Length: 22
Image (cartoon, rainbow, N blue to C red; front, top):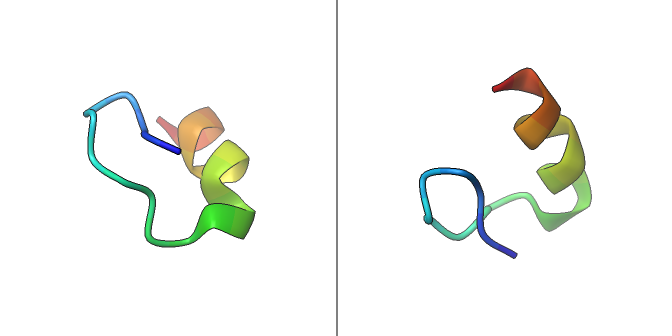
């Protein structure tokens, strides 16, 4: 899965949380 920056999320399990944080 990729984040808003287009970089692969290192923590796949927390990918959704990371996106929400941004």
